[in-house]
Amino acid sequence: MNSEQNLTREEAIAILNTPDEQLNELIERAGALRKKYKGNHVSIHLLTNARSGNCSQNCAYCAQSCRSHADIEKYKWVDDEKLYGDNTFVHDHKLSRHCIGLSGMKFSDDEIEELASKIRKMKEEGTHLCCSIGFLTKKQALMLKEAGLDRINHNLNTSRSNYPNICTTHTYEQRVNNIHMLQDLGFEICSGGIIGMGESKEDVVDMLLDLKEINPEALPINFLIPIKGTPLQDRDTSNLTPEYCLKVLCLARLLVPTSDIRCAAGREIYFKGREKELLTVVNSIFASGYLTADGQGIQDTIKTITDAGFTCEVESD
Image (cartoon, rainbow, N blue to C red):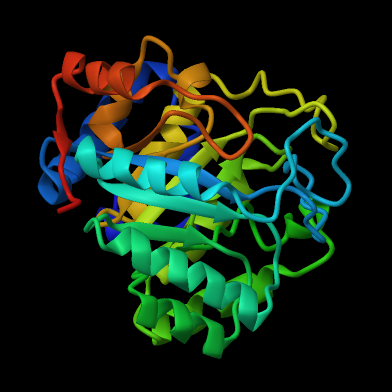
């Protein structure tokens, strides 16, 4: 078997087909890389849904998309009290990063300037910030950079070939180009995907190989939580066994060993009772929920980490 950074596509597919009885060996192999690059620490991130619903894009998994009928709250800007309160929470609990999600794919310069002013205020507390914000123009990206934003999330979500099955209002290539533009401007990148949307193992591998080329600072893997009112509300997720999900995360670690591999949405569902194995491979998780789904509270998250024999990483000043 080749070294972790030179896996062929065939070798990567074979990893996803690892017999369950050989999973411990795979976890050990991925865990060695996790320890080498990330030590024994787990970084905890808090996600705030700063702009909810009314999105023009038709992403099949998303409760906020234009073809979703999910019962969610919709607002242009979350209350300042909530946004800044979450930011103070990140600071006071010494969490790694405050992640801010905004629904939509394109924004006016005035909207970006409004966001930039909010970023300046949050940066006063010394918190690390990441924005998930769709497609930016170069001018808009520089406005956010000047405000102190250093990291942007833009997920690939699935493979290039599977992308039209998930979304048709923009292309995979647009996502890749947006990421490269942001990297050229000096932004750190958070980019990952969603597992369980009907993709093949080859699709998972192809997505991860593209992420290897991007080499993001953070690589979040979400495991689908079918949301009522979305096109994927009845998606069969029985293939998302803890064993298969762990194989996906192991492959992410083997292919992109220096990234923060994050187990994002679905962690509380698909890894219940398997937290020690999970944290042997990943070094980053969310606390207190996702954009439109609840999650584990902060104290329970910290207990999960310490009970598994790991320590919480403190990044924010």
